[in-house]
Length: 152
Image 1 (cartoon, rainbow, N blue to C red):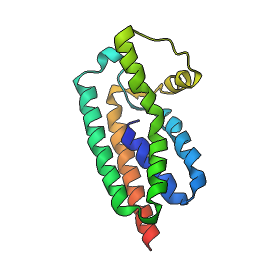
Image 2 (image 1 turned 90 degrees about the vertical axis):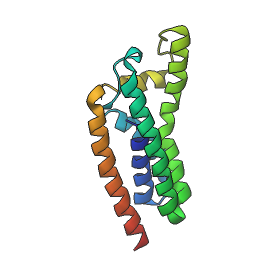
Image 3 (image 1 turned 180 degrees about the vertical axis):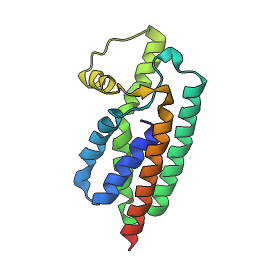
Image 4 (image 1 turned 120 degrees about the horizontal axis):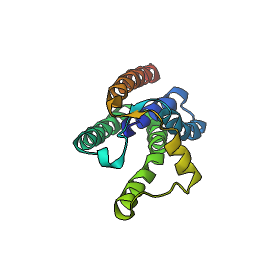
């Protein structure tokens, strides 16, 4: 899943519960989402223009989501921001891994968490961006509903 989808899902968990105990579940939600079919290229060699376009769109959307959260989360701002961060953080390791693979060639999956994380992403497909957009639309609607409910 894209960082934006991980973040908005975790934000919804935080707003739905309004409790700090949800933070470990925000982290766990990352792995659960990665088990669903989603966008991804089959190999590092296939990460061309489309991958860069999706990455750029995800970055812009993530910043817009952060702005939306700052404007609407109210007293739950820090809870939502931390949940969003935890929802995205497992993907940070991939930046380092891709960097090392480009320098040294393909690396073995020595770390059991990285191995697990790679294994559960069976559903990565180049056409998965369609599913990502649908997921985002549903999560955005849910976020708006939770914000309205919190203000009533």
